[in-house]
Structure formats: structure tokens, C-alpha cells
Length: 508
Ligand SMILES: CCCCCCCCCCCCC/C=C/[C@@H](O)[C@H](COP(=O)(O)O)NC(=O)CCCCC
Ligand SMILES: Nc1ncnc2c1ncn2[C@@H]1O[C@H](COP(=O)(O)OP(=O)(O)O)[C@@H](O)[C@H]1O
Ligand SMILES: [Ca+2]
Image (cartoon, rainbow, N blue to C red; front, side, top):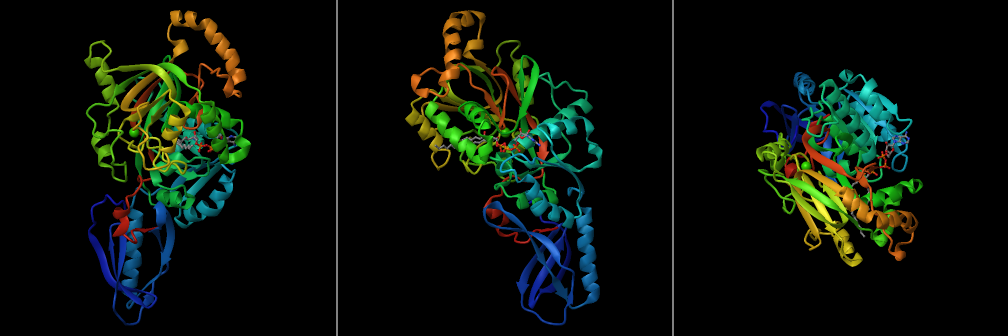
């Protein structure tokens, strides 16, 4: 049962007991509730029943309750009715394909799964096929070609954002091949994946889990999978010269976040703390990059990146803007009869160019890179941080960790877009290239040396794109949002008031 569901028809209402305390217990379709009352006689025990209990900070736990009642027949009616209701819920997965990355985060993926998740899946009678990956892209390639997807109700990854990205790439690719679509065409309207994806967080940032559930807790994620939650999510496709490069669901970042990622990969032995070291180093290095950003603003959508409202469970903005706002991109281009359409262009020197297709909230930044971004509205928030002083950049970064608005600075701008392109300055045209050849050549040579010597002032001409934690091989890219291309076993972050009056909502 999701909090958005309407109250269901009442199926059973009885006075039952838990130990010596009497309760009015009611069962409606998939919702079991009990309220304390004063009462008496001899009671027959049911067998213990598991249910989901909400705890602090969006965590869920599995709890058990044993009811007793005065009459054996009534007891049977209750047990039968509950079993019948649970069997009737078709959204709950019965068979899952699970990939464990033993290499991500603190290298605890296997242990986390065996100790915290497998017992819950067994208790919920979910059958599993578990694959521990042996190398990078093992899960992606298995999903692309080998996996018998018809046998499963969902795919689960145990790992970080990089591991999730592998699953997304495998599933989207397979779905497009099955639909005879060409992933190399940036203008193709892609087919949404039917299988839902579950994330058991065991990586370094785990931003996709945090931003869709509200916490990075393996047990909570396992329970969202068991109750069969579903959260659609936007996906950006990234192309270079009509060649497909990658998909992105969270952060696509050039400049600061690209440099942090490139530097941190060399420090993977440090575990998740590598990002703090590389973050500090890249902040001190203070490289900026020149280039041109063009974008198509999102039109006809409700919501802006500066809204106070947040994307939460049952988000009305996502409901309003879906299901296919990404098609607006094509509409703009054709409406304007070959002109530039509604494309806007900005040239400049940037410390960071970030596209956040969701808030990108994570433990390092609980409100995220773009706090008002939406999971399933068909848009991405394009954040441009222009060249500024170190002090000002620090002010901007620190605002990711407190209540102040990180966009309320004169060197930062944010646009809600459906498509954008980036061209680094030195790729712009042959004449530009000739003019800059000498200078650029020097910079390239010194850039290599000077990465580790920020004081000498020589900056590299190019950064890399950080695409959900993976480094992109190209800098000039064409990015397009595909509305609701995938679905997660999640429901979005719940507002506290959603569950204050639903204390015992889900039987397992
Ligand atoms: C001086 C105070 C600085 C505070 C800056 C805080 C800003 C943090 C924003 C973090 C956004 C993270 C977006 C998520 C990116 C992940 O996809 C990616 C890979 O994750 P995983 O595979 O689980 O390792 N993580 C990163 O790129 C790390 C960025 C860290 C930046 C400091
Ligand atoms: N068995 C493996 N050995 C090495 N790398 C792997 C393996 N399985 C997956 N990977 C790769 O590990 C990288 C990091 O994975 P991820 O789960 O995101 O951890 P982290 O959050 O620590 O980056 C991803 O690029 C993924 O493709
Ligand atoms: Ca979005």
C-alpha cells in the first residue's frame, strides 16, 4: 500500500489481542491496522505476522506481531483473509535477479546482502538468482545479452551509483534492442524499461538510493523491494556526434565534479573518503574551463529549480509534467521551421557545469545539488558556476550543506531544461583551433605537469564529465532527457505527515 492510495474497502474488523492488550483490528485491501481498546475473554493465538514499521529518518524496519482472538473460526478467517490479500497484490516481486559488486564502497556488498537482505527476501518468499560480479561491466553485459529477463520481476544491484549505472545501461540497451530502436540516434523516442530496479546501497556516495528513499540503509531498501514500490525516473542520454556515449540519472558534472572523480579514482584504495581528499584538492586547484553551453528550456511544465517545494512521494509536479515532456524537445525544434528554435546559448569560463536530473541528495549534501529537482518530471536542472574567487566558490559549496540557497550568488545560474549541449572552447571551430593552437599546446603540456602544482597558474584546457560517478571519454556532448525511462523499487522520499496516522501499514 502506498500513502497515495485511497482508503480501501473494509474486509474484516474484530477485537483481537496482542499479549494482554485488546485492539480493534481491521483489514482492508493490503492494509492492516490496529487500535488499542479495553476488553477481555479467552483468546486463540494466530501465528506471528511480519509488518513494516517506520522509524526515524525514513528508515523502515521489519517487526512482528501475534494477535489472539476468542474464537478459533474467527482466527482462521483472519489468517485466510490476510493470506488472500497478500497473494492478490501483483506489484510485489516474486523472483529477483541480483548483482553484487564486491569491489564498491568499503567492499562490504557481499556481507551486507547475506546478513541484512537475503533473510528478508527469504521471509517474504522471494526467490533470487544472485551473481557476484567478477569485473567492471559484468552486470551490464550480462543484462544486455545473456540474462533471461522473462524469468524475473525485477533486478537488484548491491553497490553504489556506478553499479546502478551498469544495471541501467544493461536494461535500457536490451529494451531498445527488443524494440528495434537505435540508441545511437539522440532523437529516438526510447521505450521505457518494464522491469523495476532495486538498489541495496553498498557504495561510496549512493546518491540515487538516498535521493529516492531518504536514507542509505540496506534493510529499508530491501523492504521497499518486498512491498513492491514503484518510482519512475528520468534518464538523460548522452551523445557525441550522433554516437551514443552513456546514460545518466543523477549528476552529470564537468569541471569541479569531473576533476574530483578523475582524481579520486586513483585513490580508490582509500574507500569512500577518497572523495573528501580529492574534493579538497580540486577546490584548492581551482581550475576553470571555457566553453559554450546551449540548452532548450523546459516549457509548459510546473515548477522551477528555485522552488521551496521538494519532490516527495506522490509528487504532484511529476504527475503534472509527465508522462512524456521530453517530446517537447522535438516539438520546439520542428515548430520553429529550422531556426534555432528556443535554444539559448551561453559562452563563458566555468568552474562547474552540472546537470542534476534529481536532487542528488546524499549524506554529504542532504538537500543535494539541486534541491528542487524532480525524479520524474522529464527535465534536468542545468547549473552553471562561472569563474569566481576561491572564497566565493567555497561559499557556493558550503551552501550545499546548510539551509542557504546555493543558487543565490551572482556567479551561479540554474535553468530547468529538456536538452543541452556543451562544446569546450578548443573544439569550437577550425579558426578558433588555429588561433589557440600554440597557447593550447603549451597548456596541454603544462596542464599535465601543473595539475599537481596549482600555484604556477597553468590550467588544463579540458575537464572530464562525471556521469553518475563514471568518467566520460568525450567533452563535447549532446544531452537529452527521457521522461520516466526506468522504474525503481522505491516511492520517493516520504513527508513525515504522510505516515503519522499510518502506524502499521504493510503486512509482509
Ligand atoms: C567544503 C565543503 C564542500 C561540500 C561539498 C558538498 C557537495 C556535495 C554534492 C555531492 C553530489 C553528489 C552527486 C552524486 C554523485 C555520485 O553519482 C558519484 C558516484 O557515486 P558512487 O558510485 O556511489 O561512488 N559520486 C561523486 O561523484 C562524488 C562527489 C563528491 C564531491 C565532493
Ligand atoms: N567485480 C568487480 N570488480 C571491479 N570493478 C567492478 C566490479 N563490479 C563492478 N565494478 C565497477 O566498480 C565501479 C564502482 O562501483 P560502485 O558500486 O559504484 O562503487 P563506488 O560507490 O565505491 O564507486 C563501477 O564502475 C562498476 O562498474
Ligand atoms: Ca528530473
